[in-house]
Length: 467
Image (tube, rainbow, N blue to C red; front, side):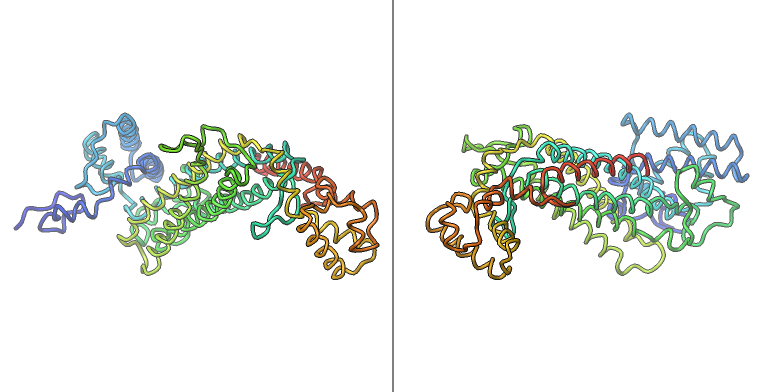
């Protein structure tokens, strides 16, 4: 008979695993990141086993003390990770058995690596979602304060990247904040489905031991145990849902990044980013490149890829657990890291944005951004909208030839297009008059921007308080 394998599951095998296959199938190089959650889950499992009488109190204490010592070894970088032991679970269990003897082997009673890893990932995701939420709140707070501060700063609003109507910079930043508010809701909603405990489902059918899954769930801070053991070990919906959230969030950050890149260019010259968020050129000394927003824009595609990877990973798997599921961790880990880092970068950068108010104002004066205001003025004077549209079109054509904005034309020049136009037209043709006229909820009037910022501030504060 060939030499027996030294794997923990090797009793049924007559020869060792091929060395390449051992490396190919091992996950310890990346899933060791789950060690804190694996140890936390094992401590809760041992505590529960003692409560139901499967372990003695002495055995429980030995296991918990040993696991805490192993946690210290890992944190100090003293732990020896072994590829032949395949994964984080078997590495920790083997080290526990080395430390406390046969009692270490009793820890796995009533569970499988299938429900163990599903629990570890959920604990990990819950921890990371809480960290990500802190950064998301910080970014939203920064945006709200920036919007409030710049409630009267006028800039051009665009459609098709063409000057459309004047808005305030604060109003534009609050549009960004609205995107993030929806993302925040999605993240918290995702957390609810993450916070369900698979432990106790064992390999796929549950266990014959008298476990109490509600006790374990309470010890680990889960809302409840999962309802079905088959689904519990094979479900990765929560990971897909997180990467879906991450993809939408990064799409939003990428749109913001695109505008920041445009606004920092010499052609727009709308804002300045502090030097600490930019880099220079190795050959062109005048360059100041907006690398942070450019990188965030680039990392968006990377996160999209992780979403597609997880969807594809799960699309053909029969119930219950399959080795394919080992491939969920690397895309999920990278998505988590990318989201956290992008949010941190934006949360640091956005409050430091310095608008170039004169450049914004001058850009808003170009492109006949108050043309709609003139049309609205004529309609209020009794002119049918289609006729008003034609009149304004003619006045814009005249302005293009004469190189004059509507507000720069004399009353006589404007009246050649309609006798309805009177001196009071200039109240609506100014940029200030235009933005002030949008004085309703959701509008760009400065007092509405301040009110919207206050509502957003209160809503975020209520969210912090758990309301």
